[in-house]
Length: 365
Image (cartoon, rainbow, N blue to C red; front, side, top):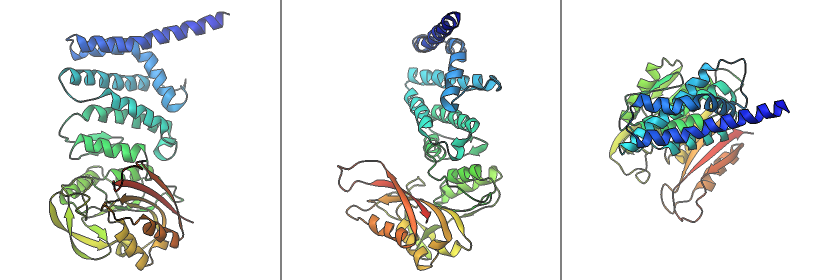
């Protein structure tokens, strides 16, 4: 009986402590307290219960052997976000608590593979997402820390988008039977995908392609300042021919060889055949080239290089040109070259001719 009463008392105390959090947040919103008073108002009643709940939620259990210090740091980061969000709301800013709530649920849905297989790293990824949510409201970026990497980009919002897409959703995860896989990254942008690959397999050899000049400069800087080895970068677009090509866009994530994908400023870039850079078996090919994926495949098929690839993740850009439906032909190139595949896209069945990103995860049979 005594054990039951103690358990019920503990639950009631925890519930009361948890209930104080929105009350403290409301008070800090309504009254003109300093940042430190806001921090104290929310932190003091919440630190113990929130640390336990967050740790249990993300890792499945609360290890008695682990130091509670990192739990407190985690909660401090969450609370600091709430306080900063309150300050932004009070001053008319646009940093939303909703983003953090959504991030927590997304972390819960992420499969326990790749970076998510390690609870400690999963926890660090969660904290990084919270930090990026706070920075999301700022217009400029001089750089931000992601795991052990320093990353520069155009905007915090772009870094946040890429972080969520690459590090949390993990579309570029693949199993490797060697600690030194050979990876080709077409459409490297500012290098977030390469940072992911080097986190997953630190000894990987990576070849990256990015034709946009400003983006390539950031890509090169991100690789250099993090001291990444065995990474070779080319300021070139990939397609089915060599020479010059018109590139459209403003160094955004949608810059493309096709004007319909990004009608921004046009300029010339070098274009090469990917097959010329495949001199050994490729453990993984990432293809995110904003509509040029069929051109790349045409080259690889003509050069008989498809057989050299083990795994691929292709972002197929459906309806880059309205009324042009070619997905079946693209998939047929996979089937004819002995690849199986899985498809993923956001459902939007009632908008004719609307653009869609289709993720294709291909594997050699």
